Amino acid sequence: MIIPIRCFSCGKPVGHLFEEYRERVEKGESKKKALDAVGLERYCCRGVFLGHVELIDLAGEFKKC
Image (cartoon, rainbow, N blue to C red; front, side, top):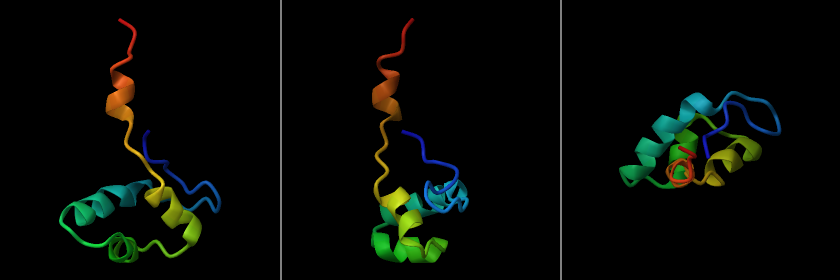
């Protein structure tokens, strides 16, 4: 739902890189080039970004009042 602050496997901080990655992908840059540009080289860190699905808006609909 929310991008993790650290990589699950190696513990490298990755949360601060997500905004730049998302902006590059929205501008039309390939995901591989965007991951290279933000400095993610390890496959575990790249997997955190590639496997991320934004569900916060969907989960917000079910908030108890």
